[in-house]
Length: 247
Image 1 (tube, rainbow, N blue to C red):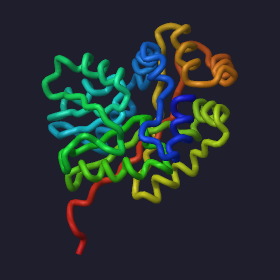
Image 2: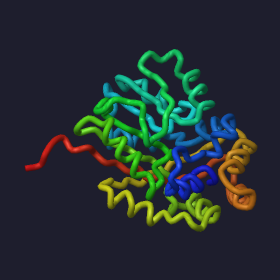
Image 3: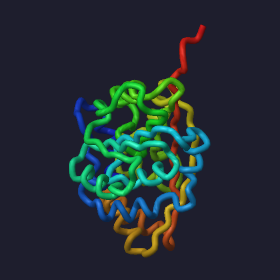
């Protein structure tokens, strides 16, 4: 996955914003991808069990064009989407214009444009938090969380078939075991989730795989998938901010 893997590798570099080639360059195809992902809601079920957000204040870091904001807004008290790429900020604002409990702010994960202690849940899905190098964002999440609040990071499971091998083939330097170790060392729990991706048309499936992978890997992936769906493994990493001093 060009967007995910390159961002993961670039995260260790001292840059303010790590580009996401998939959604930055092909937002309409990425919209198709978002609609195809997790058709049974497995990720949402796991997130709701680990970090209930009904009636609470949610921050979605790297919200892209705001695809997940209405889903949070359906039960959260308030939702703030934070996104560094200006064209996506515009799209997210347009998507959520009719939702009074949602606002979209421009900014990077390392400098969230939010007050201290304003959120109960900070969520990021395949955005910024890719392992070593994301420590500034971890500190920012802790700053905006209230005591007892949770940081929930959803990333792709590079060990799960069939998507994981495609990831690793696209960029052999990406080490999913090292990423898991990083999050464990930083106090996160780990829950593996298998989501089903399902497309309406074969051409949509092929278009999505071609924006996510290099040409060679994309064609290999396309050839290995029969029909319109395939499973994708994710990892849900959760860390809670302490409620107070332990004595």
